Length: 226
Image (cartoon, rainbow, N blue to C red; front, side, top):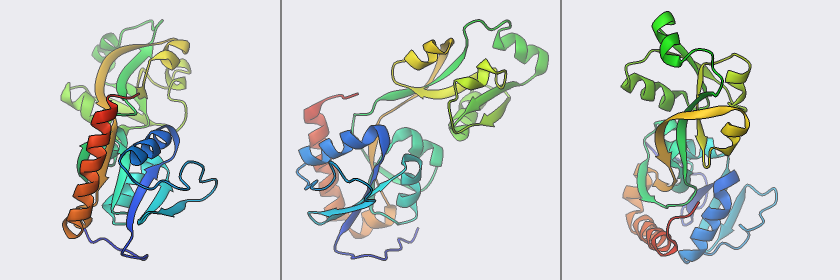
């Protein structure tokens, strides 16, 4: 895919995700020897320039799009959003922090098991923010599902009769338990990844691979992080 750049080509452009991965991303960049001036408290700024890098701060689910379409050269993104986006992206390093997992959950007090519902109806209804990952999981088990895509609190779906099960991300399972849901199956694990635009990786290979090596070393030194 062609990388379209409208800014200074001398700057490496890197996207960072807002939210739960942001602080860990900045800390790892600092440990890898990058200048993170202005990133600790960017306020409302969406771009920050420091040490030859232009940082783009974006919504986590938008990060793979920025990378695949050449808006940025490299990025830190959760494995979950990379998989769900299913775009042409080069995954370079598992950074080891931001660990969470996709799980299947259902009501603790369900009157009928999902197996019974499936035998009776031939389909089960599943709510999720991640339809691609969810569809692939159930397809691998040979189950037909009706997907309900939500963007808010997925835990509500079974409680109001909108879905039989949910597929969502959790770190501890606490929120699910607090909403009277039980985990019945693991889908996959997710951590933060260092990714690159394939064209940028070819045309700026030396700088990107050196950065990937520095981040890998910093991640290994820090060890597994939550």
